[in-house]
Length: 80
Image (tube, one colour):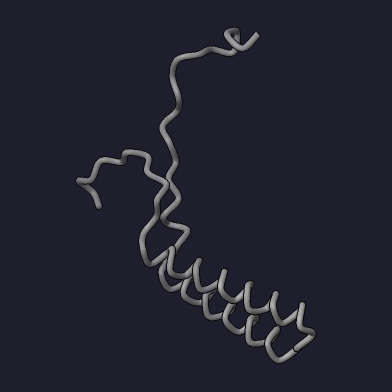
């Protein structure tokens, strides 16, 4: 929003975390499928990951990236 001050928060929106959580759940399901040698469960996990990816595109999670202001204080000579 235009009038909002950027405080450098890296928390992200709840919708972005939902998309990431769905993708993580797909990785967990697929991982269990691999350890059980059950290819149906692996493909279900892949499907869950795809759904999470679609959610990520819809929610535009990459717009949550915050670029911090340049840090002031120490110069390159202070690191020697």
